[in-house]
Amino acid sequence: MRFWRFSAGPLLALSGAVTPRTLTRFVSIVVLGTAFLDVQTARAQSASPPSPPTSSASSASQSAAPAADDDGSLQLAEPDYRVVTIPTTLRLPRHGSNFQLTHRFNGNLRNGDFGFQASNLFGLDQGAVVGFEYRFGIMRHVEAAVYRTAIDKTFQFYGKYDAVHQAASTPVSVSGLVSIEGENNFQDVYSPALGAVVSRTVGDWLALYVAPVWVHNTAGILNIDRDTAYVGVGGRLRLRPTVYVVAETSPRVAGYDPGEPSFAFGIEKRAGGHMFQLNFGNNQGTTFGQTARGGNPHALYMGFNLARKFF
Image 1 (tube, one colour):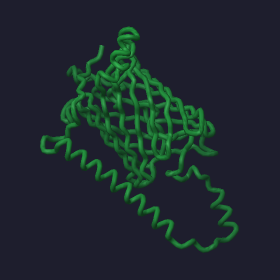
Image 2 (cartoon, helix red, strand yellow):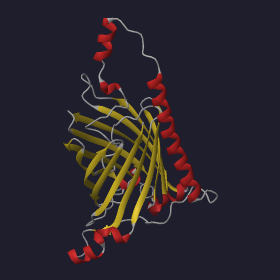
Image 3 (cartoon, helix red, strand yellow):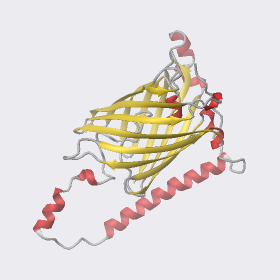
Image 4 (cartoon, one colour):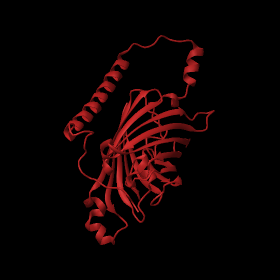
């Protein structure tokens, strides 16, 4: 049984003085300003004079440095900051940014027969839950993000520290997570969370993830003080140069566990700095707290994620 109050209304601000139009302008200014700064930086770098020649020993040392040390380089096996919902260990360059849109249709694809689904355009006619995320690299290997979803008008603020990166002598990548979310535009039912992500890539074609997360106050809507611990498990398989399939599940291992464990799967296409993903899952929730509360029994929702990098 679910205890969520769904709201597919317009995006609201943190207070009555900030209108959706003002918030839209602010996000647009931030995105456009970041893109402008990226262009100016690229021009300045291309116009700078070449560096003087170095000794052969120094050149050999520099050429031996792996490209993976560049936070902004394309990671073919790990091109995005989410699998579907669970986070990845992909690093964000210092002062780089990423914008992501999450979209989950309200229509349950497991309800009714084919005719019923076709009459509702397979859920597209039944509204949707929309979320917006913006993340920024505040320093090397440290990023901060703000995310807002229409479910209970929830705001989530979180940070990620990419402590370890997979290399020849290091078999895995490890990132630490800290988060707090609140409903009603961050005014009620606060749920802090702590977690980590451990990943292992295999060549340029496979990435595997394990993400243990602890969330406090997962039954706050019932005025019950409960916590939940779950372990997100997922992977991304590269089928073609720019085409991937993804899958994940988040079973609860302790604490409050209504519903069923969340699961999702999908297919995605990378196009330059864009990533488009078509996904299916039993949970419209996308925050740590919403994932901890589980998915809807006997439900399957269609949705998509759309991401754009700015670096």
